[in-house]
Length: 157
Image (cartoon, rainbow, N blue to C red; front, side, top):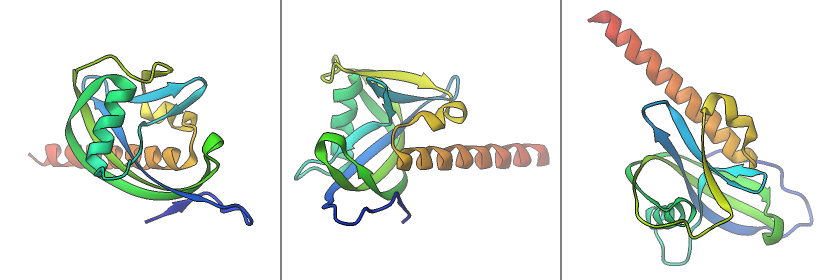
């Protein structure tokens, strides 16, 4: 597992396990990102005590978007030293999944969050956290490699 960021000497880092999701929209290959003010990030967040990753992910996505998810698949895990703002320095272990929105089940609880649909190739530099930018770069590359292999296999037929 890769680690992103630089640990600053003399700072006490709080462990923060989290899980995040890359929500795909099949019809235009865009992905959902959340905004909070000027910050942009993947939907998801911290795992609460006695929650599994998937339980936390489902809760966070409902809180931030109001939607349930379907076709949830593991993508990758990364560690990072980050400035957690009000939370202080954080030692993040983030698990990433890929999924699709299923159905709207409620209004978002976090009213300051908005969901935007973006082109992952064009908007990867806009994510707030370096570790999320890294994961999006990995996702874009994996999609590209998958599409190349599909085209190659299609030509053989």
